[in-house]
Amino acid sequence: MSSFLQHAPVAWYVARAAGLVAFGFLTLSVWLGLAMSTRLLGPKRQKALFGWHQTLAWSGLSMLGLHAGGLLFDPTLHFGLSSVLVPFASTWRPAAVAAGVVTGWLTLMIAASFRLRKRIGHKGWRRLHYATFAAFFLALGHALASGTDLRGGGRPIVAALAAGPVIWLAIYRILAPRPGARVRESTVARSEGI
Image (cartoon, rainbow, N blue to C red):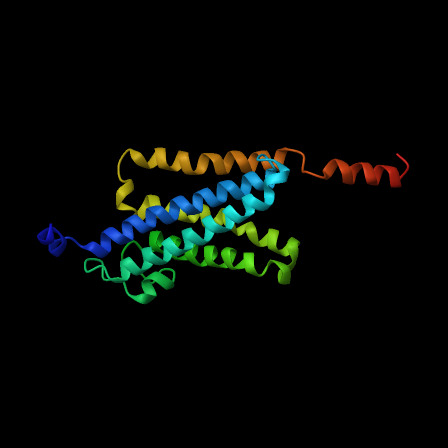
């Protein structure tokens, strides 16, 4: 076993595993956030679900940090600090890596917004959360284009499993009546004498 560890690029394995776990946590966080916004999981559970949503986002972000750290220590790819922090600074698959870098910054911004929610206001916070869609699809593109574990026929399956619920929940959110919309409509109708 020790000879295996001497020859195996452990940092590369850490980076790969952490990247997959980060994508999983962030995907679950997006699913849960959309399910909460549609109230599909019930209006009385929002506070508990919001805690899980935050935990998944921060856990995904911590795994994203481990993913970047693993890449910094990988002896094969020779990633520098700028490669994991600056979009298009990497010479290895620059567009795919840039998608991951932008995902990281967007995820950090969105996760930090949980703490700044009172300062930026609920409306601003919700608008900022629309960046989650960009972060999710950039992360998916990064995983599919640069992830060595998703080669071959598994790519379409992973893409469908991850993106399918996001697309379905987003469409449902757009088409379903918003909670409280009926109350607002009836209030407007009464005030206008309709």
